[in-house]
Length: 456
Image 1 (spheres, helix red, strand yellow):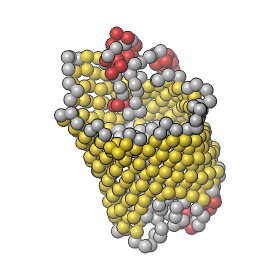
Image 2 (tube, one colour):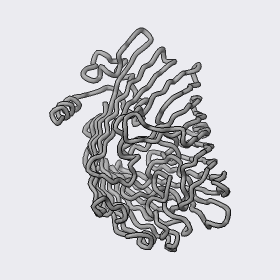
Image 3 (tube, helix red, strand yellow):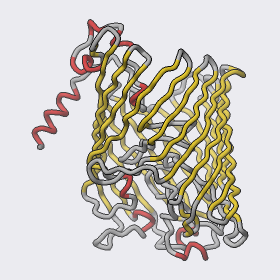
Image 4 (cartoon, helix red, strand yellow):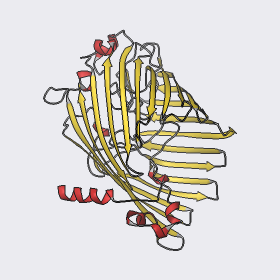
């Protein structure tokens, strides 16, 4: 096995492609290879294989290996079988896909994945760690005329800036959905209508589940006003029996109405997103909201760094006995605060100044700090999976009156060897605030991650 792994890695390191690789692999751009097939060599040849005058097929894949170390995971409350809250684990991810296109009107995309977790027998969130073999994506695209497309099957998605529906790249298992999407593309406007069910990753072989939650909606992206200004609008309806708020489980029918505004120049860009949620959870009326703001500034003289600032103001439940639920549902967003602490973007106020810089060529670095508080002292803090009060499961969180969650320091680096090979070193240190100490062990968390990734 070791010899096979070394041989495979050697082959991967000697690949040079003309394709442009996208984080959503079905959006990879192969035109460079199609237009310059004479220079194709190695795995380049897998990117454009003609089957007939109208049909071609391509292949691709990804290998990601990641080592993680936690000191006092989950603030000292996440003990393993030995009673220790110190954890090291190794994530392995391998994904391969194929893309079959016929006459530019029909496209079949399929992707198989395999993820493993080693050294940690008691993970906090097992559903994001291990899925030994799964059909991650399988969908059919049908282009109707020139501007309409219907997609049917299992697929990854990304809307907006990963706050509503996304594929969640950070965890070992990425998120996909079963269902259909109808999309319309014009020169300056895109609109998509969807009906989907998220896929729950299971640890075995081809045993993933869906049809446990349902989400449907419309997403519109508009560039008509100005090239420097983009407006996005969305309406999303969620039906679920899986969500838990303040330790109460019930049937949820929630509507999300949102707008996102993005404006930018070469030196300055900004983003604002506001979402309001209504509906019913069991016998409670839902009234929740999220306000997010991000500003980035690049100083003159082509300095290789960017100064940024972001803010989230996200509602929590005001009073357990008032007949209303004010807890914001983050739906299927990415972990907004990384993997250091199991904290999601519900019932939270946070401020995040940060800088992004390139100290040497190909090394991208980001450093920042998150100051976090609870929006409501009558509600807990929620996991990034939005399914339970994971970080504070005991009843003590209901009696904790302090808002301060804590302060998280982050450092993220990514060294890009070439288009296909990269290495990352990430670190986080979370200083537990008074709420964390009132509702559990309250220890500070230290996190370290070393990751290597190859894509072709």
